[in-house]
Length: 132
Image (tube, rainbow, N blue to C red; front, side, top):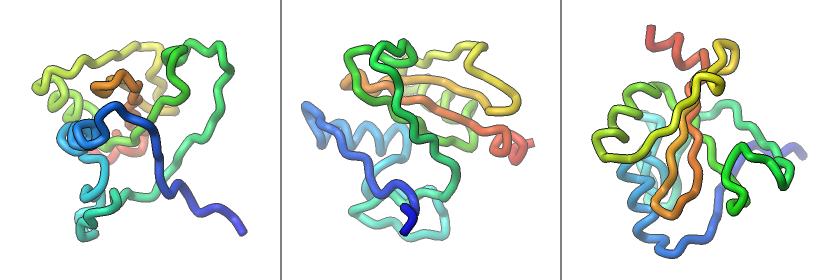
């Protein structure tokens, strides 16, 4: 009886409606969004494409993301440069570090939602190759 994948991510918010709207507007994530052009939108779910997902608890003293947060989201993207251009146009602060990128693993950037939750954006090498 194997688990087939993530079925949802639930977290608390000071203003759930505003935060959900921010994710839909800037990342195309959340109820009513679809990553698969062939899939019809569904008002209750975000229809994602299958692919790898890291599930990894971190040490309490890890400095990989803010110590006052219990989680960090990581979203797979197919066009990191295009998404970063969209985010810059929306005046969303972007963090990149050369040491995060690895040709074998991919490219990374980090942003934060309006409530300070870290969001890691990851373009795998396979996604980069499709664009070339």
